[in-house]
Amino acid sequence: MKRVFLETYGCQMNVADSELMAGVLERGGIELVDSAEAADAVLLNTCAIREHAEQRVLGRLGDFARIKRTTNPRLVVGVAGCMAQHLRAKLLDHARVLDLVVGPDGYRDLPELLRRAAGEPVTQVRLDRDETYGDLEPRRGGGVRAWVTVQRGCDKFCTYCVVPYTRGRERSLPLDDLVRQMRHAVAQGYRELVLLGQTVNSWRDGEHDFADLLRAADAVEGVARVRFTSPHPSDFSDRVIAAMAECERVMPQVHLPLQSASNRVLEAMSRTYTIEAYDALVRRLRAAIPGLALSTDLIAGFPGETDAEFGETLAYLRQVRWDSAFLFKYSARPDTKAFRIPETLTEDEKTARLERLIDAQHRISGEIHDGWIGREAEVLIEGRGRKEERQLFGKSAEFKTVILPDDGSAPGDLRRVRIVGATPITLFGEPVDAPRPGPLVSIAG
Ligand code: 5AD
Ligand code: SF4
Image (cartoon, rainbow, N blue to C red; front, side, top):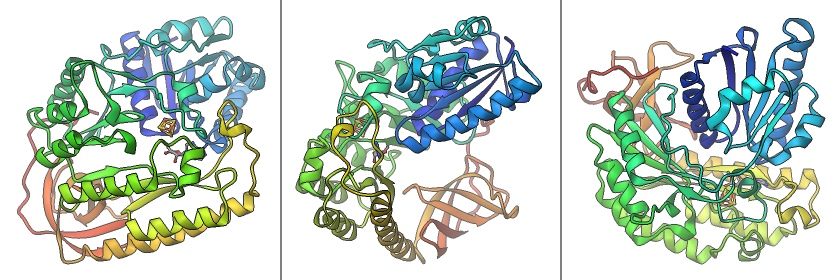
């Protein structure tokens, strides 16, 4: 077992977990390669949040079955992550091609598991209340942004969500470990730290709360920007709002999942807040942090959602005016509480509701972006445009993608631009300052 091809599906947490796995594999003497054809083993880090995510992975396993049948019968095929934990041994029966099923708490022993899986099928799906991987250095993927997992698991048990079952109980990494990791990432050349957790603002390590963690991140020498995702509305304390307002490097941007604006539906989802409480929080945030950009997650077509209840979500979307939104159709997940509530809408009806949300949000995002024209923004340069070679792209403080002419700025540089054009997705800027190089260290790759 010398070469592994690792492929990642799903959320940012999985991207960070893959970096953790990459670190464990490399320290175990295993090289990471970038194709299945060049590998002794392939490992898919998977997502279970919606049915579609699992179907994609099952489809991909077909590709590896083909490689096994034709060119490399000894290829070890492994599934890691939430889908592995969700389906457990069933996955081995279901997808005959599989040699390894490893859940989110089994990554510490990955090299050993892969070696064993070369001999016989292996399942490692024990959840471990204490595993945080806090002592393990991830092998980060390059770029300007370092993902820092500060918390694992989730205790909220929203009735539609499989995550508490696939990732287990909420655990926070200790502040010391996190400060060490954050300093290390910045010393490697990463400019932006993104603190990750399923309900990141409930982070606590016995002595410190999330406000303390934000202040510690802001104080890491050399860091340009700090963000976090995703907070839960019920855990958003005034201490955290004050830390955001006071810390210069904590960016004016919050992704604040709402899910539904109907109190009846929120209750059925076990979201633990009302729309009035969410809206009051938005007002407190906007009052404390000028220019705050807000985004959200919404689910269309939760079982029993009436036309009127859906209408409340649509009306609130128009009222609150999030900068952007991730919009999902409800997907029934086995093991969750909502799975037992009979669905009342057809797939077409759910799609129709989703499309109404998409249309309305698209219009609002467009209006908000048009409002940026003529204003200045600060862009952290990430790289060259994929389509247009002579363009640079990066993110504004508000986490908006900005495209600007290539004037020789390098990834990691901060540029002030005037916004001269906009679409609902992207802003276009012209630099108004001279190039201001970032620190002369290489971005880890
Ligand atoms: N169906 C649809 N969307 C879901 N999400 C979580 N579970 C489901 C589900 N069963 C969405 C929520 C969450 C985001 C990460 O995914 O909006 O905030
Ligand atoms: Fe899922 Fe709710 Fe936990 Fe988010 S807070 S991971 S939606 S259970």
